[in-house]
Length: 429
Image 1 (cartoon, rainbow, N blue to C red):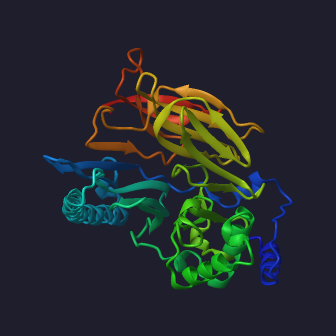
Image 2: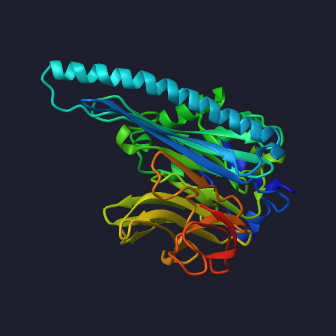
């Protein structure tokens, strides 16, 4: 792959003088993106499994929790070291969750007894959760965005995002220095992009250097949370780190096409077509042209809110348990799929949004879900991970017709962005 050497040198010079550069490309963004795509990469068929727990005694609930692990569909053994690495990652989380469950249930019981003794009347259960969003899963990289939260009393709980990244060929867990060996260049790029993404944040006011200082420290010691996405590396700044709890998690992405000089050659090209799971309420940067093409999916009261590139769409539908996936195609098009439970009819559907139009719009509601386990099961849920946009599994939600409810289907992204069914595999979801 040829790097844009002249552009890289000019960009480094601009950063070294403290100027925030705005990338300019001679070719359209589509062509720029194609230079950092590898059509030879193979997609890995993954599945997520979430376990739910509720513990209490005769006086009521004490502790509620869930945790998520990732595994291969079918025979994992044929995938070698990466299958072993993912299984070990899930095993460690299971052990951590079991230990936390025992400790926090005991602590909750003691807290409730203490509050009762002091005349208290509210005894909310303690909580612990761990969710995973698969950012990438191909024959070069597997990248997991992990969201953890806990509540042990008080005004509010704590939460934060982190990443675990693997070399898919060896199963080795990657350090940031494996992917971005130029620490000083990376520090400058993150600081510049954060300033562009969040000009009104508290860390940009009154001459504060908190953000710059934290970026420098965390990149230098390798503690900054990150994921290796299909078109770049994303970084996460959790509550209290550079701003108040109320301002939430800040995130930015340094794209391969903007800073090719920062990335190790073997990691700076993702699959030609990709699907990336999104963490709800968290911004994801998709494109370098325009530079502010950032996407966020969130839920409100009787609405689903999509924000992309400064445009807001309030889709007036009552939904919950949203699972968003953004699709990027080799020709530069992007689509958003939101798998959600619609309150009307209490049925799962996938809502499709076209991100290529000047205005945002829902272009289809399809009777499909990525949920692989029965929809009425609440103690253990399995989800298909959409990694290959041109061949992925889904479960039919149709009540009769060609594909009865529960039928496992093979699907792909159609020419208009909607989901097309390739065929039914006959397995029940």
